[in-house]
Length: 121
Ligand code: FES
Image 1 (cartoon, rainbow, N blue to C red):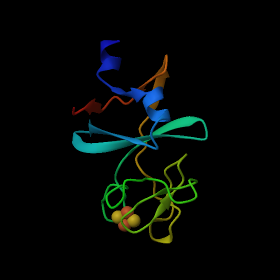
Image 2: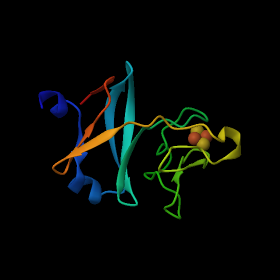
Image 3: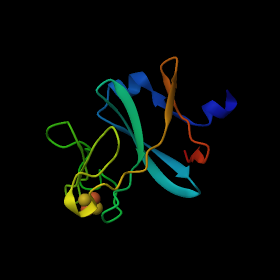
């Protein structure tokens, strides 16, 4: 359990009150941020890094979804992504995927379930 606590992402309650949350993490020895959100009843997390020009999805706006709420959207140039797979739907990066981060939920608490991940703060 100590290992789980070291990878605490958030509570389900926190996530239900926000459109998304971010956490500073170290993943595969790189300091990055993670985005965590609920979509259609399931929870998802990705490294917050758009492959187009290497920006966080929320770099220009405090949002990670497009106006329909059906796609993740990078606020830099507007590329959209499938929230369930992280796959880019925009032509330039079509088929490339955001780096997904596995989560596990125990009693309403979400933990990162990635071996090569630690929290930065
Ligand atoms: S940096 Fe994300 S769409 Fe260009």
